[in-house]
Amino acid sequence: MKYVPTLLAFFTPLIFCIGCSGDDRFRKAEDAEDAGREFIRASLDGNMKKAEFYLLRDSVNNMLFEKWKTGEYNKLNPEERMSYKQANILPLKIEKENDSTVNYTYSNTYKNKDTTTVKIVRVNGEWLVDFKDIH
Image 1 (cartoon, rainbow, N blue to C red):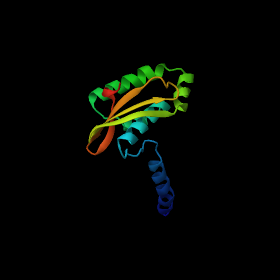
Image 2: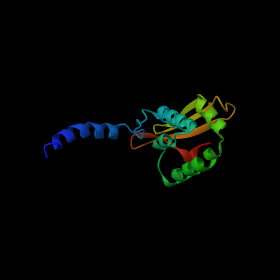
Image 3: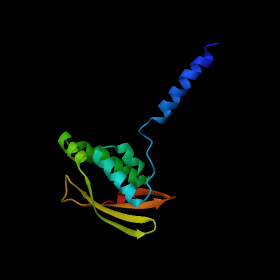
Image 4: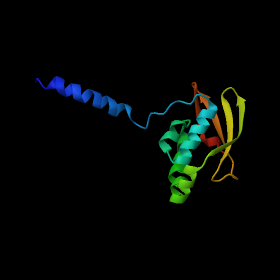
């Protein structure tokens, strides 16, 4: 029984550190541009957990993102994945529709002729990417 305080003194900081060191802790986007940039960067890097953090969670977005993640992304060969990872984001146009909707048009240095527009919406004070409106 006399070892319990010693064990607690040893394990409590250890448990605290393990609980706080996960990669699943991402910061909320400060604005629409931040949400778009974080989502795009995570997608280019193949960090699907982080990309999902910035995704507007509804049934259609969940289905489309899962389809993209398990289908299109998984079909990329290792060289293509590395090229996307090394690519820089090239913002082309950030257009505010209203106080809670922004269109973020970008390209990247790997596929710089291809442009993509993502819709970023503010829901309950959080800026999130609406994947179903990507084009």
